[in-house]
Each structure stands twice: as C-alpha cells, then as structure tokens.
Image (cartoon, rainbow, N blue to C red; front, side, top):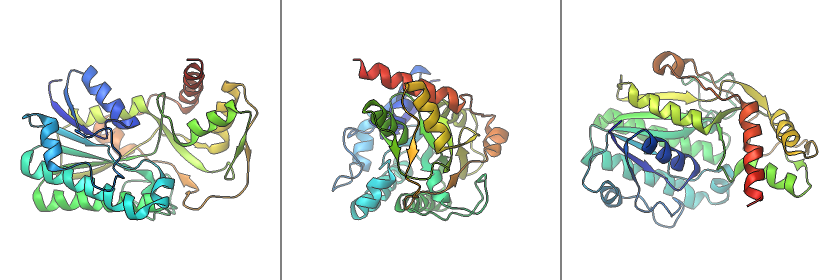
Length: 300
C-alpha cells in the first residue's frame, strides 16, 4: 500500500489506531498538525491551513476524519462549545478536500448514537435517525453536512457508523470505567444492565477501514454500519469483565440514564455484501483481552 493517508484526531484512540495500522500496511500516513488538542477548544484546531501543513505538499488519496468529542457526557455538559467545534472541524476537512484534494475519499467516522431509540433492531443504514442525546444529534448533523458536500461538490464521502468500539489502549468509556471501579473494590453501575450493545474490536475497525480503500467508491456518498454483529447486554459484558479481572459481579442501580439508548445493535449485511468485511473478534474474547491489558498497565 503506497497511498497518502490523512488522519485527523490522531491523538485519540481510534485515530491513533488507524495511524499505526496504515503505517504497518506501508501507507504514507499524515496526521493533523494540532493532534495534541481537543476539537472542543474555543477555536477550531482543524483548518485548511493546518491540514495543508500536515500533508507537506502531498495530496491524500483518503482522509479519515476521526477528530471530535468522543463522549456523550462531554457534549451534554458543554453543548455550546462541542456542537459548533465538531461541526466546524468537519467543515474544515470537507473544504480542504474540495479545494486541495477533490479526488480523495473522505471517510467520516460517525456513531450508532444517531439511531437513538429507533423502533427496529438490528439497525440498518436506511433506518430512521431518532437520537436521544446531543452527541447523537451532532453525529446526525455531521452526516448531513458530509452528504451535502458529496451532492453539491462531488466529493467521494463515506460515512461509517461505529457501534461500541473497544480494545487495548482505550482509556475512557464503559470498560475503562468498570476496570477502574473493580480495581478500587467497587462494582456499582448506573442503568438496568439490560441495555443492548454491539461491540466491535479496534482491530476489526481498522480492517473495515482498509476494506474501504480496497473497494472503489460506487457513489459520491455512502453509509455503512461497523459493528461486531452480536448483541450483548451491559450485564453480560461487565460480568464477563469482572470474572476475568477476579472482581465482584456488577450491581446496577436500575435507573436508566438520560440520553442512553436501550438497544444499539447493527445489521452489517451491507458491509458484508459490498466490502466483503465481517468482524473477527468475538466480544467475549475482546473483553477478556481488555481486562488483561488493564491489569498489565496497572503493574507498570
């Protein structure tokens, strides 16, 4: 692989994994110049100028836009900052592509959160979007912006709706928070434990993105789900995590949290059919691996 690949959000979990993966594949990987900053700063860290600087005179064949706030809570706590910052960062990427790399494929990393409490499960790409959080709403708006640039300016844009991404190196969200609690002798969690999620390992996410590069774009705008393909309740996942970690079983408050959908499970048949992609890591194996990774980090 000799493509020039641009990754925004390279300091984050997913962005960093993409950088490592594509460098290992032999691609020429470039990262946004201000990767140490959050997209939630009072000014947007991504600009056409910073992206030009990151490319160093080269032209990208593909742009993975992984920058932006990665938590529902952060967007809910600071919507006046997070919403315009995240949309502004995407706008900079799209304008950069329009003006400097019109033949590049722009891959927008979106989220299953935009499905919200959709009536049908598993969720298909064509299903309605009924987000129940500002984070999900922000992702829906970002997809609309990407679709607009594809329709009006002919940019080859692909949206990937990621479900529950996890793996070694992730230092936030449910599994990390749970392992921190277990290490403190705690096992208390919000929610009912019956919330359904579709977990996808970071290695499978990287494989998905590689499959996009191996397939020519069939249209200027496309959408894919990316998930493990197996529903698991929060209770199942945390019980398995606790067992591997040698911790007490999880105890749930019984109260659902605002902005937390009851079921986010994907239909990935489109990716299987059009990309030949299927997740390889079962959530049971990946969750056990995560517990072992956390334990190894704690011993350092």
